[in-house]
Length: 221
Image (cartoon, rainbow, N blue to C red):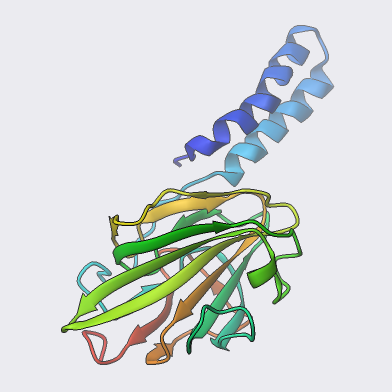
């Protein structure tokens, strides 16, 4: 399985002392540090994903950008969404979830912003506007109409950094890798109100595979 390059300093920080411990005969410490190194590597695992439908040609499908538990699916929570009327899907990532993030919908990246903030528990609703986060806006013209979605990488109590690998002007595909969040976090996706949601709170989502919702006036009707 592929491991993201962000794992290198974390894995090395445990692996190098493990080698030293083994060389000096401290076998128990070496095993502990070796296990820690493997665990850190597993956190940065980057599995391949295969959606049921072709997201490149199906302009109506919005996929999950993250693995984890859906903690909100419905009208946007007060004071959390961007200005305007939105639906909101929030996904909480535990330490055991894959933390590679994917684009929920393909199009042109029109805005990327990083907002400093706090480190509240990511499952709390207010973390969506009070925690440190990166916000990405994607637009796409479908049947002559410009459609827009917004999604956020939000840090939590343990996740103190997000990595965002897209910039304004980039053209991205649905399901494309766009970055990751380190050590527990949350993803919020804000969708126009003419999208029909296909998930509910309490269920689990898989990045790049689970359909969050779709516009029914396109290929998905």
